[in-house]
Length: 342
Picture 1 (cartoon, one colour):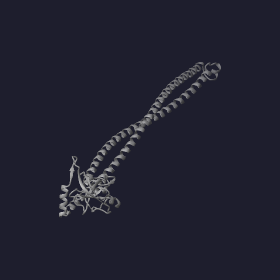
Picture 2 (cartoon, rainbow, N blue to C red):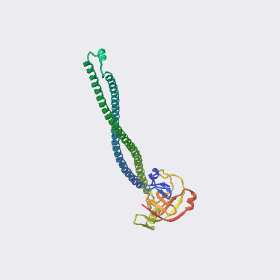
Picture 3 (tube, rainbow, N blue to C red):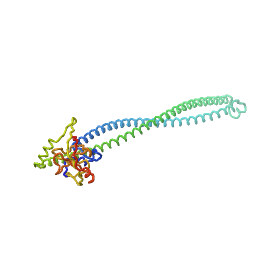
Picture 4 (cartoon, helix red, strand yellow):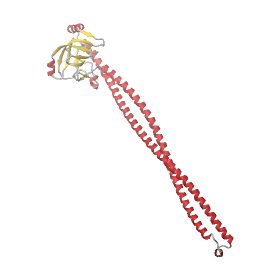
């Protein structure tokens, strides 16, 4: 058998199943399907890319918000540390003031009633002793006022620390939410990036398949043209053409047509002239009756494609490849009405 048109289809492995076995559509039809797939992939890629841009923008905003919260939390932590240092200093000052007040009060208690002996031992006069007592009293009052001021400052610092602690807890909750949002957006962005890479790989593969199939389709067209020109113009061929022209056939509204043919089964290994192996669904035809690349349905056999020619295939005769000699013998030669889809 000599091959004809359905070349690239088998080569790229993108063909639909015919009757449960792999078979080929026309290369041009396959290219149309592949280009449609390319367009679909391109639209999907654009959609995923826009979605990725949106996610990246949202992720940038979420990260910026998280950084702001982290900066605010760090600032509050520093402010609380400073507040605690001031509170410790005030507590120390209060302790010192209390100690000084206690000493003053003890001294005042001891010297509060000056007598002659105290004057003789220490003061030069009663006036001097009284002045000393007044100084002690003023010092005690000053210490009391200092302690009151320090306690007020301590209370304010306690309030500030409580407020900062509350704000710190709220910021911690907000920071946790922001971190969760960032993590979720990062996962979504990685998923979109992975999807985009997968779509790009599929698009590249489809583009290579289209280019390869285009080359194979051109080669198939050239071989078909050569085979058609090489068909013998003998009386037998002319008779076959006339038989084909007058053979019973009908055409439906959807473009399909039926044709009565003799179907002969064969089982031969090998390859076609294009280098592709013969296989299920490959049908040898007379190109002047059934154009190469035509898809068809054969009752009892299934779907097939006109992809071969043969020296003995003239007129309304087709050869069907069978996977075994037993199946070829079981089929034999039958007259069937086939449906052509091209």
